[in-house]
Amino acid sequence: MTNYLQLLLLYAPAIIFGLLFLWDLHKEPRQFRNAIWFLLLLLTLGGALLLQFGMRWLILPLVILLIASPLLVICFLLANTVIVIRHEGISLTTLLPGLLALAVVAYMFLSPLLAGFGAPSWMQKLAGLINLEATWFFFSFLALLLYSSFYRLLPRKRRYDYIIIHGAGLRGEEPTPLLRGRLDKAVDLWKRQGRLGRFVVSGGQGPDEVISEARAMAQYLRNSCGVPGEAIIMEDRSTTTLENLRYSKQILDDRYEMGTGPEHYRVALVTSDYHVFRASEYASKVGLNADGIGSHTKGYYWPTAFIREFVAITRMHWWPYLVLAIGWAVWIGISVLH
Image: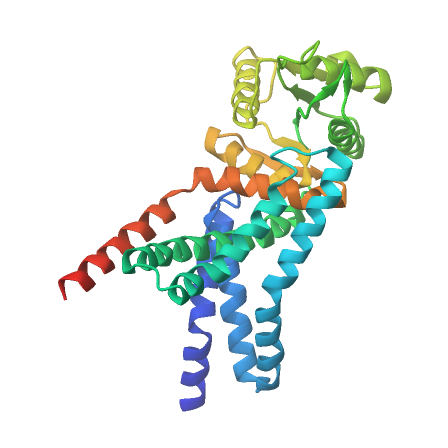
């Protein structure tokens, strides 16, 4: 009985996080907190397995890996920055891996340097807040990286009434290679389901574009993929992902109200693989019953693109940073009073 109780206590954290993850996954897989539960489940389950099966010999290699991982990450990010700049040119976007590498360096050395140089107490305490916020930043970054990969692997064995394709820039009147990848992925899906369903090409006209992205996508589908015009619906007002989905849903709802669309329609959102989770979360926000499906992104560009996605998602879920700041302020207030 004692052994069973010990096992239960050992696996209790993993069981709790596992139940929370499965409940939220069943309820709505397109939400950010699933990523947090997923990482906590992996960490607690891994720790329990190590302890139960006496694999304490793995602890030292894991500690070494943990210590070495920041250096490996920094080297990888800096190397990726050079590669991306060579392919895409220098811009704030292509500098993102390098900026993240600098953030990792600051996270590791800020507090020790301030303490070593005898910085004022208030400055060291402020560095403590920065490290606390950074800890959540890197934890949630890893959580989203793992869960977004898991989300893309979830089974998609259903027929879709509509296939929304998100815009991704033009070269003249032609889709960029990134956008062509999305279009080709959508056409493959359409063919796999017997050429049933309709495309919704979504994207307005930017200030440097000669036509709307929606029109360019429609032309590509007709001329290069053999898609009949009646299978294409254009949404040509949007300028952001959220607008893509909001305006597309409005068009599809209007089709139902006019009696030309199904009452309960199912949608596939076709976008680049790094963008799938954010697009799916936005779809949940606007009430669109949709699954995210990703097209391939070139390997060298994937880290840059994912960092940009994470920043956008972090802006949506800013409240943990506020909670940490309030907790830090309360702790500093209590320590001052004592």
